[in-house]
Image 1 (cartoon, helix red, strand yellow):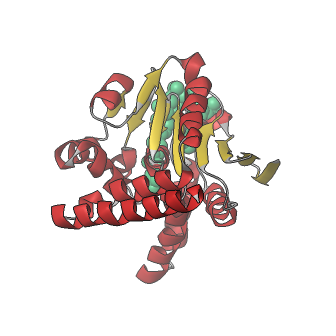
Image 2 (cartoon, protein in one colour):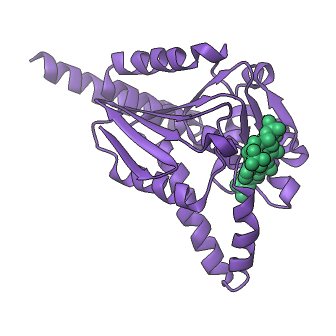
Length: 252
Ligand code: CAA
C-alpha cells in the first residue's frame, strides 16, 4: 500500500513495517509546515500492528532542515499571533515528531548526507539512526537566532550528554559520521550503497524479537533516566512478572 498524503512525503506500509519517505530531493528535502502536518497525520492514523517505522529520504541528503523560503513568511505571520497561539502552533508541529517515540514501535532513521536543523531533529525523534559514511548532522537553528524546538533537545542530551549537546547546538557546527558514531548519535555507519540493506537488517532483527518483550524493554530503557535505582529495579520486576505470566499463559 502506498498512500500519497502530501506531495512531499510518502507513507508506505508493508506488513509490520511502515516507511515514511521525504521526497523533495531537489531542495535536499527541506521541510515545510505541510510536510509536518502530513507526518503528524501519519502518526495519528498508524495501524496498531505496525512494529517498525523507517524514516528515509530521497536524494543525496536526508534533510536540509526547514525550508528557508518558509522561515520569513512564518515570522511575518506570527507577528499577529499571541504568545499562546505561537506556542500552540509549535506544539502542533512537535506532534509530527513526537509520535516516533511511541512505546509500541521502534523507529529507525536512515540518514545520508546532510541532516540539518529540523532534519537533525527528525533523525533524533527516531529511536535508532543508521547513517552513511557521508552523513553530517548540524543543529543550525542558532544561525537563525532560534532554538531547536521540534523535540530534539532532550534526545540529543540523552544520547551525547549535556556538554556535547550544548556545544553542538550553540556552535551549529557539523558532526560527521565517524564522530556521530563515536558519541552515540549513530547506531551504525555504512557505505552509501548499503544504507537500505542495513536498515532492512535492523528492522528484521527487531521484528524477529518477541513484540511484547520489545515494548517492555523500550519502556524500561526510555524511562530509565527519570527513575532512581529502586524505581528502575521495581519497573524491571513489574515488567518481568508481566512477561512471565504472559509466556506461561501462552504455554498452557
Ligand atoms: N530550504 C530551501 N532550499 C534549500 C534548503 C533549505 N533549507 N537547503 C538547500 N536548498 C536548496 C538550495 O537552495 C539549492 O536549490 P537550487 O538548486 O535551486 O539552487 C538546492 O537545495 C541544493 O542545495 P545547494 O546547492 O546549496 O547544495 P550544497 O551541497 O552546495 O549545500 C547545504 C548543501 C550545506 C545543506 C546548503 O544547501 C545549506 O546550507 N542549506 C541551508 C540549510 C539551513 O540553514 N537549514 C535551516 C536549518 S535550521 C532549521 O531547520 C530550523 C527549524 O527547524 C526551526
